[in-house]
Image: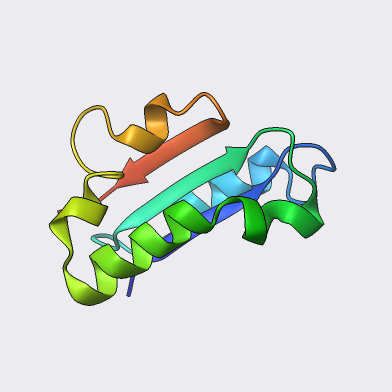
Length: 93
């Protein structure tokens, strides 16, 4: 199992506290990414985060290390992307 949790910032469809609580309650060892895309409504989040969703699936389902680089390391690409905020990653091997 792995988890990629993203939500919107504009309409606050998932409050940050709720997102963090869910992220923190994941079972030990579960690879996970959490983040909120800036200036994106709830209806647009799937369309506007496809690159990371596709990279997540390629990495976790197919073992694509190039796609995994978006989430791995001490300074993963998603963490430095100015379009995202409140990003956290854990157990990314």
